[in-house]
Length: 466
Image (cartoon, rainbow, N blue to C red; front, side, top):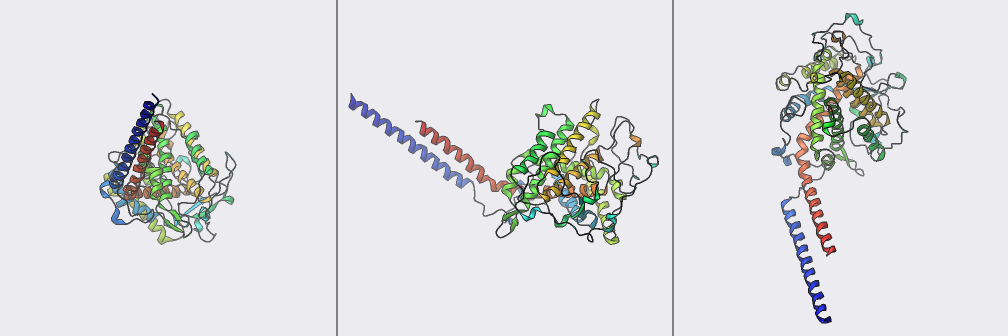
């Protein structure tokens, strides 16, 4: 009886080990097949050869951009052929190169404990003699309000899509209802040359950086289920998400790959993991680009007549010329005449109340930029949030019931921020269009490896249980 039991036990052990060997063989076979199906790419982040582009995958996103009036292919084409080259030239002009900002101010929400570990976090401020002399002079106060007239009357319930063609009467200090305006004290303001302070990786990571975005999303721009959000709330979320994607892309596109040798380049892994692996983040990037582009084209008459004076007649004429090319480009007007239709918003009885609520949320978001613990990140955060607040002000500047007495007034700094924001978004769109396929190809192996690891763990767990 004992002998027969021993034989059964030995037989059971043999069967178990045969199953283990079979499972192990299966795993090895899966590894071999995975390695054959996933070609290795002779490419390190930051060292990308032009011959490695994958044009067949460039238009992964197709059709109309959600809530907009243009499709992805048209956006990519117009950006590459028209918008990106013009914006690159514009932001290098003296007028758009200098941004006035209060770099150090108290966070209104919590003590500032952010620390950067790189010198690239600091901002190089302009000496007094560098930025244009005219920027130091006070703003004009404009004409009395009774001299203003609306270019085109609209029905009372409609949103005015046009702006007074004779609206510009000098830069003003009018507060923007969409932004937290604590920057009127000129004694604490400084001018920064944006060309000398590029938006790039700074080493600003960890709890301090995460707390900023957590506060933005959880307190001011929560992502509820789609059925619980009205259209206006969805748009606020998409704008912030699109801006967040753009910032992540700029960090990835200009990343410190090797601190010891000061080697900078593309970190495609970072771009994939933060943006590309989430399709809605790419979609929101395109949406934000079209939203800001619509604001610029809506304010075309105002921006054409604006004073881009820096005391350098040659450069100022060039700035005017570039602005006109941007505002009235025939290719843009033919292919995408209305990038975003703002007229469908703020309808119904809740319209005014909803606008005040979303204005308050966005104002809180702009105030959060004072809590960014990295000086350069704070600079670009303030500029881009101000640019987005300026776009919101342009598109939704008509308040109350009497549209005929409303006009647009912008600060010089707001226009500088608006155009620089559009350029940032344009650069992000271009980088995703050109490098997105390579980033996804690079991460195919990682995805396969992750799935394989999961398979191995499941098989091993089954072996242990038996």
